Image (cartoon, rainbow, N blue to C red; front, side):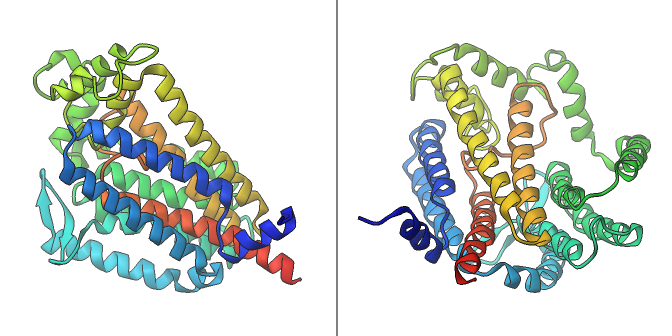
Length: 370
């Protein structure tokens, strides 16, 4: 019989947090079941989904083995590589649905914007860790420039939703470093004053239409408002118990667009109902809470702000996607974490989970050595 202390040592040696991993595993299995329905029982898509899950788990375990100091040391190189790829994708990238987001290297096809979700918070965490907390005004300005450059490069593609989330990933890390509320309020006021410029000069027509449709999707039911209307019908028709797995009419009869990516939550709500939605939200809450506990136990500023930033951005992803498909937020093309189909997004998210476990388990190993 292995006692609790020995069990902790075993998990520490393989750099795995068991509670965190169990929640992720349940979400992956749950996501695969929902995907089977959302894809219309498409075998090829499910094979790809299983391959994505397998690769993601492998990446998570691999990233967990790397000590946090290596991430901190190599973060500038990853950041520079990400900037180069973002510039290249804007010049030579593959266009899909009006956006130039993909790099096609023949063997693999990926979105460099997904790399920015790791590179930006890592770089900001490194800057914060090498400065006193809270950071000085000079260093805050430098960090904001570090966040702004990749965010603008992604917005040019255009991918405003991902651009905003990349900016949030860096800003959350900066916020957790202990910035003064005066500085935060001033920054929010500046962003608010920048809104008219964003609306009239930087946003595309289809992006403005999405915001207009948020207020009145029924004004264009067969055009810009179609996605939101069909999504709300699917969610509302699920009721308390749901229509049953594989029995959703909106999804199975293909009234619901993008049902395996951005609108997969609508499929889940229609087929599994309120109970299925609550089950998913409980899993998400448990994962976020566990991540924040790990952040609170980190031994240095880099670990605390990095883990905390990742989990806050994860929460924002969930909030934005569910708000988007429910008609509470504009449609911005943000997938539902872990559940939606998409290799790049899943692998990057699993890599972030690996970084979280690396920060936690290497701390445990250091404590045991001491």
